[in-house]
Image 1 (cartoon, rainbow, N blue to C red):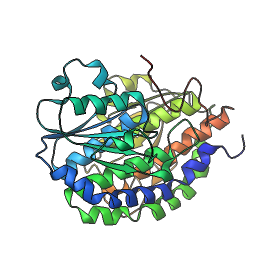
Image 2 (image 1 turned 135 degrees about the horizontal axis):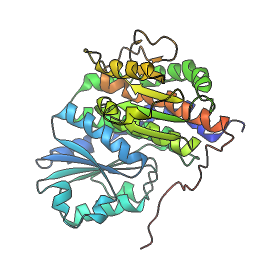
Image 3 (image 1 turned 90 degrees about the horizontal axis):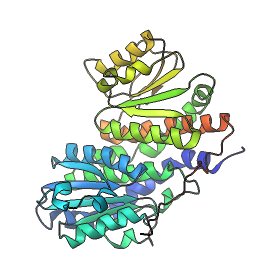
Image 4 (image 1 turned 45 degrees about the horizontal axis):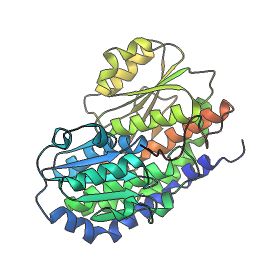
Amino acid sequence: MQNPATYREIVSQPAAWDGALQAVNRQATSLRSAWEAQPVEQVVFAGCGSTYYLSLAAAMVFQSLTGTPARGIPAGEFSLVSELDHLVGSGPTLLVAVSRSGTTTETLRAVERFRQADKGRVLTVGCYPDSDLARLGDANVTIPEGREESVAQTRSFAAMYVACCALAATLAGMEDVLAEMSCLPETGGRLIADTGERMRALADPGRFDRIYFLGSGLRYGLASECSLKMKEMSLTHAEPFHFLEFRHGPISMVTDSTLVVGLLSEDPQGREAAVLRDVLELGGHVLPLGETPLPGFESDRVSFESGLGEVARSVLYLPPLQLLGLERALAKGLNPDRPRNLQPVVYLDD
């Protein structure tokens, strides 16, 4: 398949990251007004599928930067849990609803139920300014540069994630983080150019029949999203795990046809690297991704060497692993733009 839309969307995403930063900056006053209008005991990020995994990562970022408790919840839970207090608690809450299209039924219903219960303020993040969701928030961040032709989210996910990180930094008053994030487009472009061929080499379906993605902290949500991309685009058995949890059962699945991808922190004790070494000892293969080269893993690795802080650079884990899923799909003769059994948006008609 020549030049699929998914490829174009992955390699063009640094421009969408810049669009995300500009979108948050344009809405900065409205975002701060919504944040300061009343005391907030907690923040809930809600989305479906990819944007649920985005919510897990964004909640960790928000909590770390603002000090306010935050968590990610699947938007569909708002329709299934009978007592809303059991889902979001009884205190004043800020809801951040995330949807690429802004038309996903479960996400719209989550906002509507939250509003009806008078739980607090609502912020929205999406890619379509004229969508239903973009009219429901006290402040709405939209990133047209993130829009896509493909079903599987790549450029849109990364752009909305950058927007959520910038949102957290804006509300926390962390201008230093925002300044670092302004360097992302250039850094991301260089990373994409440097890793494309290596991801193609790793994508050979004859080498691996299962792929596991490990990440802790904010990286768990990103690992979950990268696992989903691998499933959607290449129909490969893929699962995400927290790093140290991998030893508690899943490691029994490691064989010589297993690839374990590690989204590394700057763990000073080397505990994450130790898990990857366990995989190697069992005959599996590993792909570490992190800011600096990991000693002892010279063959297959991705090093950002961005000079940026943890939050600012966290989106850099995405492009290489999106390319890995894309290249594996192409190697298997699949169409990554139109994954089997999937639609761009899930609508409920009940």
